[in-house]
Length: 287
Image (cartoon, rainbow, N blue to C red):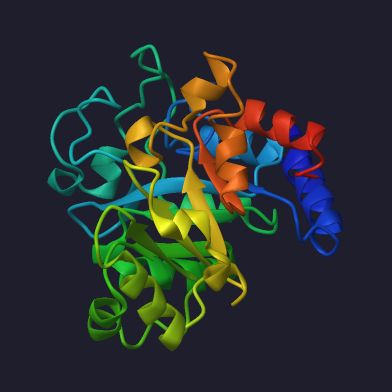
């Protein structure tokens, strides 16, 4: 009951501030609040929503009988007390396994389904970023329609527009969508402009090992269309070294979170959601 109360409270705060906070930075919790609950667990997503994040990120896999469950790795070996790939098991079978916490200890948390997560977060104003979902767009779409949560989900992929349009012509105009663009690649600007010519993405997730791209220096051509800029503060290989550890362990915000903000990010995905929220609120950049 307490978790439900805090979800509703967080939703009220987010909703109140959204109309007047055009300069606010949205926070995405990577695999939920995995420091206080097993990664990709229902509890991790509920904790993240309760602390006030705007988006939770999760990963999709399919079971033997076609259910969509939340699992990052190709196998369940690292994060559960089971072995094998999700497709080895029916939903009933995979529900018998239990997730491990960050110390590798087995907890009482089962592997959740996408349906369970969407039902838990429904009405909270927290969006759900569907990572590793490209092969199961149709199945995910059906679940979102069934649960009445289509507008809370963000589909994503690293594919160019033409490829997504070719594979999912019936969905591309019905879903909230975010391309993932590798700025290290020479065609990065073309990938972005092709999307902008054909649709209005919710955001562009920009990943880079080097921070020298001209797109980082000036990405107003993205934001002036209404699309957002998403930059990860996770491990250094996604952001040219401007990462969470620099912010927290080195206490160097200038070269981490501040750098990301100063390079146009409207959304930051983090492994430190609580600390990032506190920092942004001190700077009046989050509600």
